[in-house]
Each structure stands twice: as C-alpha cells, then as structure tokens.
Length: 450
Image 1 (cartoon, helix red, strand yellow):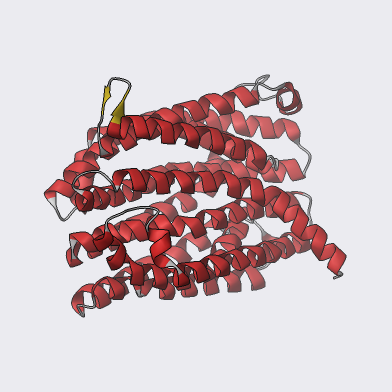
Image 2: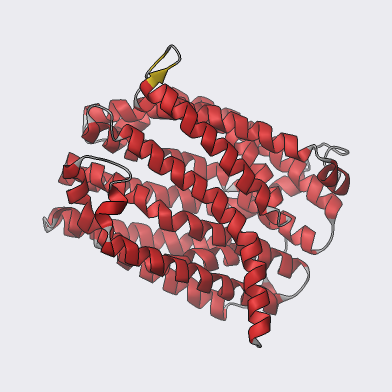
C-alpha cells in the first residue's frame, strides 16, 4: 500500500475522530474542573472519596443504558453505508422513544435508592452520605441524557461527529457554570457542596437534549432522513438496537462494578488512598476519553465499510485507527511518568492526597499505553456484531484478574495503594492482546446482519 493511500486513510480517520475526541475532551475538562472544585471543599478527603464512588456509580447505571447508543450507531452506520437514508430516520425515531421511556423508569428507581446505593460501596458513613446526595440530584437528568444518547448514535453513524463536538463545548461550559454556582453558592443561591455538582450536571444535560433537538430540526437533516415524517416506534428496529447494545450495556455495568470494587478495595487500605485513587481516575481521563473518540470513529468507519460490502477495508481502517490511538497513549503515558505531580495538582491542592497518588499515577500511566489498541479494536468488533465476545473478554479480565490481583497485592500482602494499582497493567495488556487476536484472525465475511 502506498504512502499516499495511508496518508489519505489517516486524514479520513482523523476527520471523524478529532471532533469526537474534542467533544469527549470537554467532558474530561469538566471532570477535572469538578474534581478541582470539590477538592477544595471542607472535608476534602471525604468528599473526594464520595465523588469517586458517585462518579463511578453514575457511570455504572448510565452505561447500562447509554450503550443503546452503540446499537443506534451501528444500525445507522450500516444503513448509511447502504445509502438507505429513510431507514436511518426510522432508527432514530425508534431509538428516541425507546431511550426516553427507559430513562423515566431508571431515574425514578435510582433517585429513590441513591443513599442505599452509595452506602453499599462506601466503607465510611460520612463518605456514603456525601455520595448519596450527589447521586440523588445527578440521576434526575437520566431521561434527558438518554435522549442525547440516541441523537449521538445517529450523528456518529452518518459521520457528523462535529455536532457532538459543538454539543460538548456548549453543554460542558454550562456544566462548569452551573457547578460553580451550585457547589459554592452565588446569585442568592446557597452552596450545596458535592450535591451541587450532581444538580449542575443534570441542568446541563437538559440543555444538551434541547440542543440536539434543535439541530435535528435543520432542513438539511430533516429532509434527507425523514424522521419526522414517519414518527413511530418500530418493534423490529428496537429489537435490533437492544440485541446489539445489551452485551455492551452488560459489559459496561460489569466493568464499572469492577472498578467500584477496586475503589472499595482502596477504601480498605485507607480514606486518603481512596481519595488518591479518585484523583488518579480523573487524571486518566486525559488518556481514556480520546481513546473513546477513536473508538467512535472506528465504529463509524467499520460500520460504513460493512454496509457497503468492503470487509477488507473495514479491517484495515480498524488497525490504522488503533495505531493513531497508540501514538497518543504513548505520549500521555510518558507525561504521567515524568510529571505526575503536575497532573495531580490540576484536581486537588491537598498535598497528602497528591503524594499518595504519585506512584499510582505512574503505574497507571504505563498501563494505559496499551489501552488504545484494546478500546479501538473492541469498538471495531462491536461494529461487526461481535458485541458478546467483547463483553466476555473484558468482564473476565476485569473480574477475575484485575480485581483479585488488586486485593491480593494491596490488602492481603499489605503493599498498599501501589500494590492495588499494580494490577492495572495486567488487566490492560491481557484485554488488548485478546481483542487484537480476535480482530486480526476473526472471519469478517461472517459478520452478524442487523
């Protein structure tokens, strides 16, 4: 293959990936800002530990249903590759109705039991109370969040990732503004502490849903895809969305429960160590979210290629995208290793937490280098229909390697936080290797039809 052809491929990949990365990076910035705001509240160790539980619990519940975007994304990408634009509109209609109904039910349930959920994962009662307050307000916005999930899947599938980028810039700016006001208090509003972070995120989510709906009203999209002309729920499409998304949803919930278990393990080591782990996770978003952006791109590229019947190109674009992601993770990993205190100072000014987190961030920085290969090729496999394989690979590695090793080293052998985080490179390397082998040697001519 010529260098000119490779250059064109990279430009094609980056044209889709970079806006997605930019949109996800705004979420990273909000996460870092939120952690920095909360990290300067009284009871710093307790609220940071509570925020770690609250954020991971939010990801666990939201990811169970936000992965419906994967089903929407894959279906749209396939039909867009086939140039079947009216069916793209039918998929969007069905996805919006499906996700909104699910969101109403989930929001009611989780808001009602927010303190029970938080207390289950908190080793300290005070940490559990703060985390429960955060979850109570954060989950009020789930129905609106899941509407945006459907719109994201649609725009990702047709390659319009710039819409997601604009959405990210707008909604996350509002998120920061709302959180500053509600965490500390302003304009006559009393500061709510960590709970204000949850409410601010909910208000920003509502604005995000309004933005996506406004964009969908534009004639260039409305006339091409006809989603408002035949606004109805199609049972067969809903079944396909769920069929593709369910393994991804289960994968996300199991993995996040695994990470919650890891956070709980660090809580057994100490409250400062649990707070330090939350800060390290927040710092890792600098690396992980852009990898997810490359994953979004590869789902679109592989899905479009499969829709057009070009299996060879589907596999080729997957590998090329993983190369770009790995270049990025190598650079970030080097920065984490060389200047960990500079990274950690972004999220907290508590020197005790920073010094405790330094060795853990260095270990995580090394481990995440190989994450780009794993996450990108996993997204490519999901676009091909192999969502069950990806789920089983990551759940087995997370639950039966990462969590047990972290407990064994950190708690049983009393190696502390360094021992617990030493399990991460094992997790990433084994998962990435498994996914690479499947992507490289899998039979792409037997992809699952959807």
